[in-house]
Length: 78
Image (cartoon, rainbow, N blue to C red; front, side, top):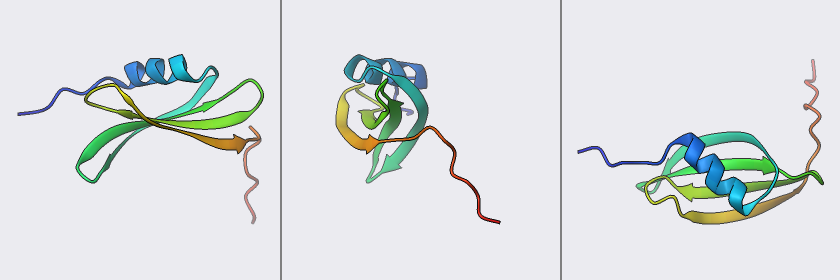
């Protein structure tokens, strides 16, 4: 039987209620038998946060401040 999980959009909404900003990306991860979403958000003052949300319950598992971030793309070295 497949267990119900929240949608990617629901995960975004939950994360944005905790951290105000723009969502950069959302990924579903499976680790140690648990399924969760990693939602990366950048705030208006350019601080990057990663919010982990349990994909089954919708509860926030962890909020990690990854510090100041530049939106510039990394330059590839040729």
